[in-house]
Image (cartoon, rainbow over the protein chains, first blue to last red):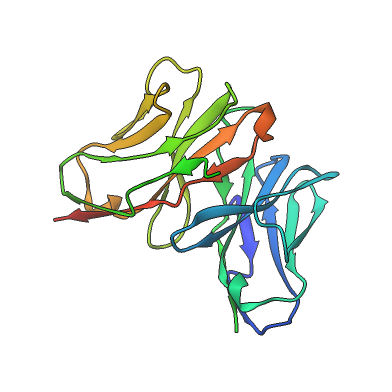
Length: 114
Length: 116
């Protein structure tokens, strides 16, 4: 089984619908992240959390919210999805407080908003 | 301001030859880390190599090496003896220290095509 698991892997939804992407990890890492990937833009940070009580906005948090339900679980919500939120979403984790802190990624969730 | 710049949207290399993927970065934090990740067509993100800002030696991992030029703020990835399986997107990333909140930001990526 993957160390970082994302569900669903693929989702098609309609404009205005609420959608939740879930992420769970077995790596025991405190730090979790949500990124969005659009062609030509690399990965952009949406939200990150350094522990259950710590949530931080990233570069593109507007239109998104998150919940850190436990050390191992970090969910991303789109309250009212719009077509330009169509993208590939990655959850990632990292260990420790300092460097290196390489990211361990889930397999990605492809979201299409019609 | 963009902090990670990858100026090569696409690169071609002949199989068995070496290729350099460019990355420049911008930070005022003295403590930072630089990473390269590979994304094959299957979509997963794979960590390749890391260079710390205080590391004296360039990082190497098998066929991957990082050409770190601190004064120029560049961290180019060198892949030696390219293989067909190296065809993928490659992302340069930076993790700043305390002032940057230890979050990682990415460049736009370079798509590498390895020709047989």
